[in-house]
Image 1 (tube, rainbow, N blue to C red):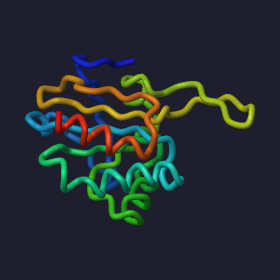
Image 2 (cartoon, rainbow, N blue to C red):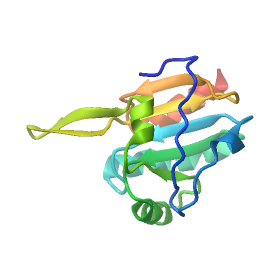
Image 3 (tube, rainbow, N blue to C red):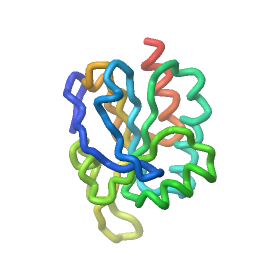
Length: 150
């Protein structure tokens, strides 16, 4: 698990439009990376839309969503919910593993590997300012706003 002060991992992944995100282009900006289990599910939609709704209040901070969905699913999710920020397709869960959010989960007595909903605020130099593991959808934008105001 990452802690404050760690260097944020970088894995090149395609976004909802098939463009590979160039992490170096984000140097000099704060970045909010949030991991969600599955596009177009209720909690993930709530989280993504809440971040969309505060985008005008976070200055130059870049929001980036990540899930194991394919780019086509990310595209439908972004279009349906007017999400104007990159949604990365982490199909092989490389970035999720690097951030420590690819975990064993249980649902109805069934165990499986999946994303643990988490969010990270990364500073302009690539270091982790805040790591929020097991964050709720409604707390994600609140924690981001609190951190940026501190």
